[in-house]
Length: 246
Image (cartoon, rainbow, N blue to C red; front, top):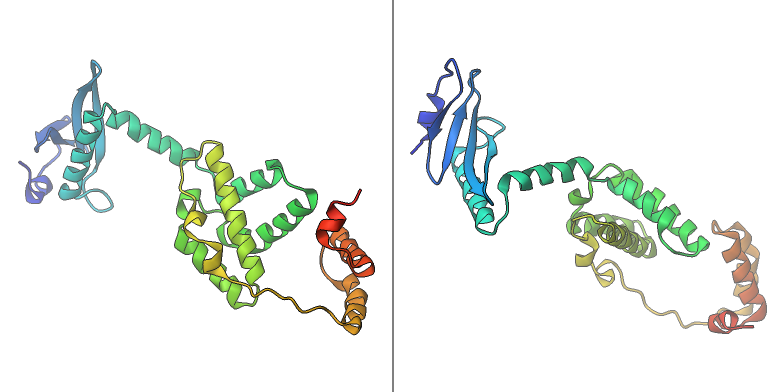
């Protein structure tokens, strides 16, 4: 059985050679002195070899290599090829999409009203892209999202923080629906943990309605929303009455 001292003492020779450890693991020493941990096995009539990693700074320790060897043997017991699974993981990493790219695809492809799309795009580009544009989907954690939303609340925009959480949730759900193997960080961040709101039941006075009607023109929102607000003020109908009107 190998020790760290024994591995450090291994010297390159004229050709590659192996030194056995335990549980089927061994080290392979190349002509240039590179030491890597490997394991040979047979699965479904095939002989395969999996490289567990290189030894040394930036690589694996002997203890960690043995842990990975045990993990590989567990996979074998379940009929999974450690070598093929390692290739799959590398391919997933190479093909992994960034949050910014997936978010853009969601904005273009997801079914939603044009006004909703415009609102979500504005929040996505203002609140999310500057922070997570180039992060891989696997690199954003629930705590990242919770912290980001809290910062938005602290600056006095709790409604925007809720929208940010919802947009993140929908982007990840869209990715998962299209084959991304990733957990949705928004699943662990409930809206009530970000902000709660007290219902506002007070009616506006005539003077306040007059002021609101006058300043709506300067509100930075969509023209359709601006027109809708004017119509509500002029007609005083309920939202449901307007939606159900024939």
